[in-house]
Length: 156
Image 1 (spheres, rainbow, N blue to C red):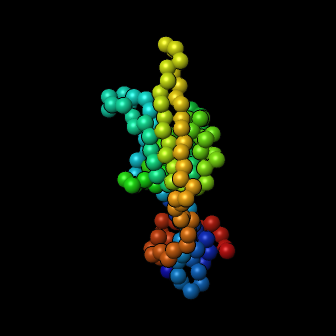
Image 2 (cartoon, helix red, strand yellow):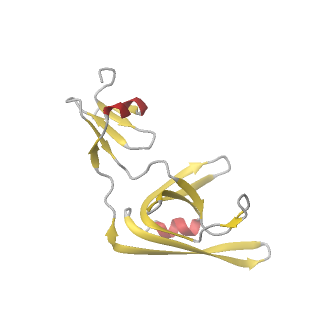
Image 3 (cartoon, rainbow, N blue to C red):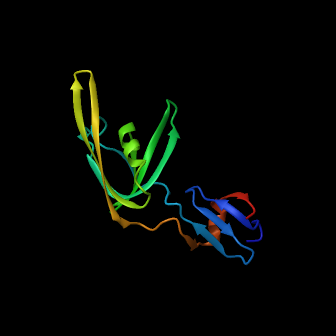
């Protein structure tokens, strides 16, 4: 590991890595990584010609805003039984999840409503289990070879 400076690095998954002077590498899992899938709740998927799922339940990890060319879009992240899932978020969902602590077991459900022929909207319901929390954001020892994928941030 002679080619790497001792200090703080960031992985593409946004995990933070500390490369210490004793040549041990520690990572900090912020709860975000590349999701296994990104879904939309409610509505109809024109590509698959099927209805989208209407709910998701899992540990809420937070969100990220992305600029995809025609305005910012938000993806909410959940750790579910089937893996790490991102959900495209609408305003109502974002507003309600803003009050949910990260790591809390959460169920988000949507119901499609038709206001009139030209306007559709969704009603969003968020339920939480405040006693069921996931522990994330912890330090762990990682393989030093991960430094090859990381970006140097600075000294610690």
